[in-house]
Amino acid sequence: MSKAILGGGLSGLSAAYYLSKNLPNQSLTLIEASGRTGGWIKSNLRENGIIFEQGPRTIRPRGAAGQNTLQLIEDLGLSDKIIPILSNSPAAKNRMIYAKGGLHMVPSSLGALFKKQEPFTKPLISYLLNDLKTGRKRVQDESIYDFIDRRFGEEVADYLISPLICGVCAGNAKEISVKFLMKELFEYEQKYGSVSGGIARNLFTTSKKSKILSKLSQRAKREKWNIYSFTDGCETLPVALRDSIIGNNVNIILNTECKEIVTDKNKIILHLSDNKTNNVDHLISAVPSTNLGSLVEKQHPELAHFLKKLVKNVSVAVVNLHFAKDVLKNAAFGLLVAPREHLPILGIIYDSCCFPKNSTGTVLTVMMGGHWFQHYFGENPEETLLLDTALSQLKQILHINDAPIQFKVNVLHHCLPQYVIGHNDSLLNINNYINKNKLPMSICGASYHGVGINDVILSAKNAVHHLTTSAN
Image (cartoon, rainbow, N blue to C red; front, side):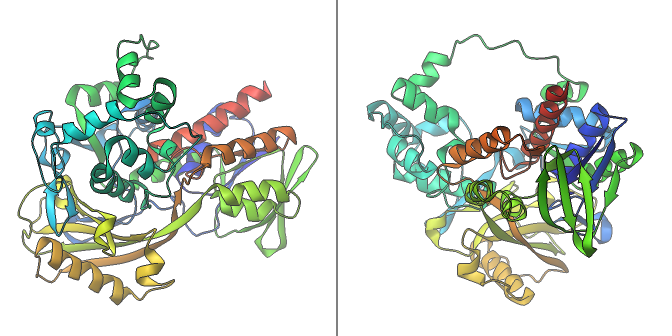
């Protein structure tokens, strides 16, 4: 019995980890097209211990998915490498929006709901009360922008939700499905007629007894973690996963591209680069759905159609900058830019405020492009264009005129999937096709059940759980 995992990003590594734990005596192979594992997570260590995160940089501890990641971290022996941002720290409380040509603090307290605060023209409570007056609209799905605009007003959609979507998936809130981030609120409206009505009806509902928390989850709850990372950067996690699966006899094959996937009764035939093939009894695909669609298209055109329709992927430019002195006026996590400002950047992260190092200066990361990448930068922009754009935006928004003493420019091509309207229906079609045709294949990763670190790890765990339980 042999199984393969296609894709060596965080989801593929996690799938290999859980498979090796559940099926210790089976032959497991992980195939990765590039020369490294870890996918988009990459921590670039610089002089004086400074870390330039070129991809995801923080993890949330809450919810079932967050608890699952903490359990994984504990099992990998990484607990002592965590550095948390506590809920009472400036990096947790202070988050800003750039709108109407200026910086504005996102309201973070109950009292702030009753005060008029720029860029809003009314106290936030008045927008929340609008939900009580708004009737229900019967729809299967809609954009998160339209849902928020309809229930809470245009300003909430423009100045809270649209920047939030830029920060989460570098996307356009007018195209992203409401079920991506607000499925429960949407279902409250559809069932009870309003969001507030649904919240009120479910406020005292007895929830299922939660499972016993891991020691690390208990610590996170006790210490009130807001988010966290690792002392050597987020890449600590995929590196530990890689080392663990190698120790569990998983064969990792790098620099090997899959050209085509063929199903033959109860087998999967992987046609690889250099005219090699690999026959396995089950495949877990952890590559983007669009890539998987191209690989199965010859034999399964209908499945390929569903896979390619599921998401579109956008590119993000990441510019890491280290300044010799403190160039920030206040401590915060950072800022997001409202898309209606029509600027080429998505946001700026204050790395040195989030995770201070024992060195002087300021570290910032400017995130650019996303849904608007080609509009502002074309297909393959020069590094100088991206650096100059980042510096000019820092000058405009934060009034920083200093030149950086270190910098790193990186483009993450087609890195973030966009869960557009109808995503859930397309996902159902994919799973139905796989089950109906009894394909020996499982899917996991950022294309399907969430784009965050917690999401892709849990996606991999669930895929492995379904495979191992159905086999018994």
